Length: 446
Image (cartoon, rainbow, N blue to C red):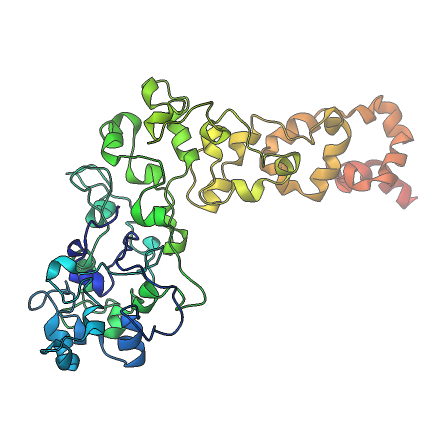
């Protein structure tokens, strides 16, 4: 995932709105601050907003297939423009028309074509895309590559193997040319189908909508400032470390839109590169030059190790961490080695025992066993059942409680005070039929 090197690398399909977001790139000349209305002077006006929104032209008016029946569309050429703007291509060239595609006037040819979109910063090309609707629920593996078949079908490694490429129309057409599929792709697809994925006005004009579906430039390009990364370097030893696409990109299968599509975070790197003794020293978190392009000095930050408790792990977090720990994509597993990665809330919730079976809750003080736990169990037994099974209670409650000693005196009458104070505690073990009736039924009959 990286920046295109020139406009010529952007296929005609990308002008119609590529299937995936492209990296922001340097436009020449620089775009003016965007407004909701097209600029009235110069070459900086919003082509799609004028042609598609104001003039209501159909997408296939300008975007035609590379060849008959192809779903790959070309960037509009002179032939398409001359349908409406024939005068602009006569002896007296119209500079404003030429400036929509060319950086030089008069144009010299394809070498001076401007990149698209011309807005230089972060933008969303996709109007909507959900990985959750497209991934294989069985996570089947491609035997030829050893990777998930659904990942490698759309994403391929570039020549250097550093970044994975975004798919384009041909990959989408494998499914979206079938009958009944929406949006439907074909050589003559209309605006309704194009807008199933694309919002071209939003691409070229960042102020077009009030609620922006902005995608981080790091997600778009796969690059972070001052960081280097290579997929191929990781996959050389993927069998040894059991690495798959979703080992790091574990949030992708549940991603419902581009707004929650994220790259792996530092804590994901820490999971392997902090303490795994089988990883060579030059690839540990303590060696800054493994990942950083610039020379870094000093100790590693707290975010680069699992041995420093995060700042948000306060006493309050200890008492109320359930929501964070049971959320999909929770990072507890990085530091708490007895917890595994969970992709759903229910799967994460079921892992509570991973910590709580080896770490006693703060409420379980010395007084808890003899005095407090009965009251809490009476209020919420389901909470106790998170850790304890039924036989756990039986092992203690089949023994004579300390309050029942000596038993003869307790039966003779001292139990009355305790029963009046908390009869429910008595009924934890006793019922009127099997215990109380032995004495009290005779009293009632008399």
